[in-house]
Length: 251
Image 1 (tube, rainbow, N blue to C red):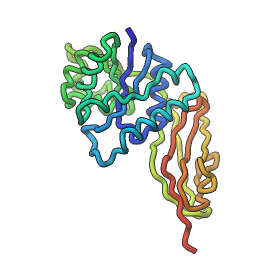
Image 2 (cartoon, rainbow, N blue to C red):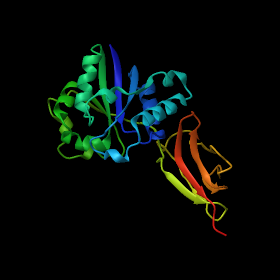
Image 3 (tube, one colour):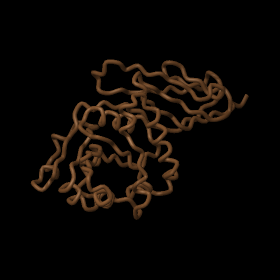
């Protein structure tokens, strides 16, 4: 029986934090594979703020393809399974349909710490918690101090709080800057945990004719247009500022 991690999200857009976590999970747990399940219509987010689901799926696949280690890369799947399900996408329904479609698989739900605290407000949360393992990746390290945790009830199948999960925290966002040295924008990247041996990050611009970025993450506008600024770690994982707009300064 294959053990499959289900890592769902809007991925609007996908970035290093998503890919870094996915890579760590397949490298350091007993998962046989991890499916990054693109949600076409997240019930917690207004539909108008989401990019087209096919576009988001393609971006997830592109980021997976960029993973340097082939052993890790081949275990991470960009999944469109929810595209054919009723909308909005509820996790309980997705997991129920997955069990029917793949009866020989064991599915594990991957959620973040923020969702752990409101999980008992999800639709059919008790069904999920009583039928599937739920793995939680911590963000704020306050889980153990939480009052009256729902995940310690007797009917819970198994909530596992992941430990020592490294992730690369950089928010994908838009940047607008003018041309010339008077309008630089400084970007920063944080690699966790603090004990990581190598925190080196390489910054690159997809189009140096539009904007350049130096080794410290300082972006300088050159000519009007758009480009993408990327940060890459030593193990080949990347994050990007996907929309960098440059305009010509008025003289």
